[in-house]
Length: 252
Length: 218
Image 1 (cartoon, chains in turn orange, blue):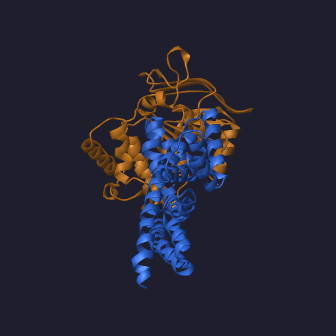
Image 2 (image 1 turned 60 degrees about the vertical axis):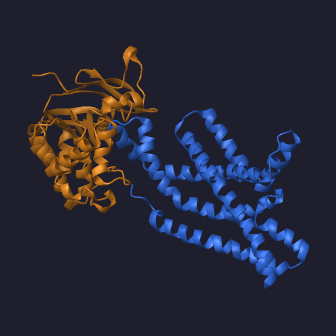
Image 3 (image 1 turned 135 degrees about the vertical axis):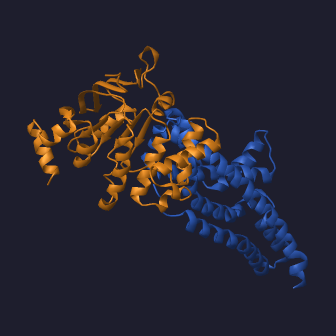
């Protein structure tokens, strides 16, 4: 097995006296798809957001491709400026899309290519359009985000993250804010990315999607990994009572 | 009628050029300085600096503009820093306005959801890039309609600078009334000149509100 792209060990996160993550350990190999499942409040989103330091872990270690995230030489905590080059290596897709409404669809993607990756305007434009084609949104390059449906906005957000040429894609409940009829188009795009062999860490409530697309499932409960294993195995034959209870509730 | 066109109107229109000059110059100071203050207040994270800006804003906002103008014009002169009336008017109204626009910009920034900066940080932007490329352009759009309203208010409020002898519309009007006693004619003409300037501006503000007003898409 090759070196992990991402290695999370001893991850703790507290807000004041409330301990949300109580020691999380897992690794993600190149090309692996991992789904984080669990009831709301279990800490799965917090866990994902700790990976790129949108939340600062209270304790624990995040290694991206062997490099310590968020901690500089001598154990010094990085600020947002120091973190920028590390975050640029991870694409993130949010529940609420978070497109920038003052920029066209194309510029939502191109701006970071130009300003972060320092590509030329022409290169940024070409890359933006190529990524839009990947999410089947090429014809909307000139639209403003406000003119798009939720599903279309989320696909643009995915294209924006892909344009980072990330080592790892982080998805934070990407379909939870969508109308039911728009969920499919986003899951389809994610399915295609999975088939390309991209490394993906996905927080989701879409159990069927997790079963079909993920290699492994981590089931979080109350800030710890309650159960983990191959996706089919955990979802179809869960071993722990809490996993069983959660899955039977999700299946209605 | 002859008296109106030969004396009153030329006088008032000369005053109007000063009114316009004072409005535009103090608006430029207010809009720029207020933006810088809002940026520092929103993003510096330095408590002492934040406290100083809050004190500055409260001081300027809670004392009448006339009082600030007197302090600038007569107070500075008394300690040997005499400035003439038009620069005093521009600086005074500009500073007072910077407190107003600082608040306008700040509410523009706070109208933006947290997800906007999170998404920008996540693609690898530095905090400076987040502020300049993502947050400021949006905050500025939210701020445009209230800034327009402020400009409209400022145009009318410039009449206060006649008190420090800045020769704007009301200054000319009052001095012509003193010498001719044509009270109604002169003040009505002055009012119409204000109306001629503020109505187009008000129309522009309404258009801004239609374009940028209301909730942004965040």
